[in-house]
Length: 598
Ligand SMILES: Nc1ncnc2c1ncn2[C@@H]1O[C@H](COP(=O)(O)OP(=O)(O)OP(=O)(O)O)[C@@H](O)[C@H]1O
Ligand SMILES: [Mg+2]
Image 1 (cartoon, rainbow, N blue to C red):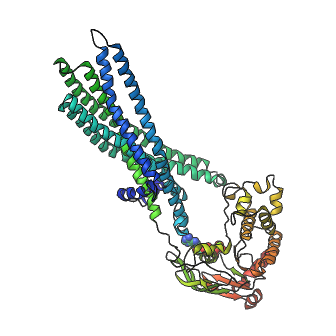
Image 2 (cartoon, rainbow, N blue to C red):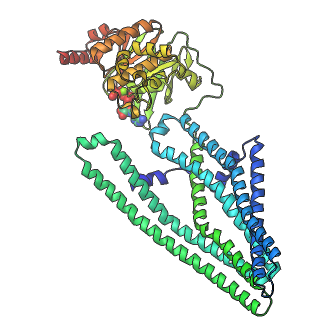
Image 3 (cartoon, helix red, strand yellow):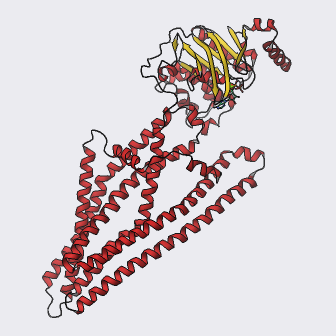
């Protein structure tokens, strides 16, 4: 229950009024002439359909009167009336469909516009936003919001509006043709019906909410469990997983039964109200026939009117609930769009120009919430240098690369690239100039080719193969049956850790940036492969600035500078030899690693 509740209650939602206001911009996009025309046409068809459907019972009644004529039936008139009746029925269907046809584009365009905006915005929000959210929850918000847009438009325009129009026309027609009392009873019945339905539906919404939460909870459990398939096996936890799922399903079962029972209460109540209305109106009509004020045909007309009016009301509870829910879903989606990113380009942000590739960290401090991670960090990477950052796990090494990439802003201090503060340039130009191989590479569930070319989508096959060669993965790929077209599986799980790392390196190399950041980029490789990649990097990177984060010190002996980080502080800085001579933390780490090797 926890998960599902957390998802539903912690989210921000826009008020219904604001939601409708926002929605309007997607229904009638600025400058669009097509959509207003379509909406107007749909309304015209809607009104035509309603008028035809109000007129149809009269034709029916006329036919009844004609056939019940005792003396002589006027056959040609009867054929004419029945023909008109059939045509009217066809007309209803035709106008109904015509309205759906012109409106479909309006609804779907609004769906796309709203979903697209939300999706685009999610990519603009910062890493910290995404780390705090469940990705599943986000996509679900968009899915539901988009579906909500369609439902809301369809139901409000095509269910509520026609009922209102029909109610008014029928009210007038009944009054004019049969008298005030018929009109009064019919309309009162409908009003009582509507009030009753809304009240009971409000009560049911709570019950259904509990049912949906239980459903969500069960499916979260199932997905989470299957995603962790391997872990489940490692710990023989199949039974625990099944039990957890069973408990979740049991709770769904109970609430679903309750929801069904409450529906019966709604239906019985609605049935009773309609039966009472019918009883009164038909009784009155019977009296009037007896008094000779009404014909049998009129009797049929009244009855048909009532049934025709009450029929769409059957869906009212459902429609009301859907509209309410849609408003919430859309409100949630729009609230996402309202979320402001932590990291935004300055108004006057300019394009970063990297000529030499000098990186400077000046008095940089950084914390996650109130946990201080980096303290007064100062260092410079000169153009063309290879600088290594080493230190114990959790020291803040990866955090440095994330700050450089501007996933986060430092709480104080400044980061400069070629003397331009990365806060002053556009994020786009900054990221374009840095080739990043992150500590944990996750690949897209697509081909190897797609994953390598991701850094430069229109690169040629030759460039891709070249990058693969430089990162020593070309041989492996060529030996695969499908070669570069091999699918890597979800998150790249069909590749080994080292293969994934090499795909990530190839991807970064293909981008040909001036600055490279390798965060444990070769940690999963054997020494021989690592050395061969190093050689190609060296050839490539004499003019590139490289920041390497490494645990295995043997890979960074040749670095121009080694920065030793501990608890977010630089405690030593120098070349390998200088640091060995100092005989402090680095020397200690070096000796320990050498011992392990022997
Ligand atoms: N998004 C986050 N929110 C809160 N704390 C975080 C977040 N990311 C990292 N940390 C914390 O910041 C500290 C530094 O993390 P970082 O990833 O920079 O370490 P590292 O030096 O790269 O370690 P390793 O060698 O294990 O990769 C860690 O203690 C980690 O728990
Ligand atoms: Mg790290």
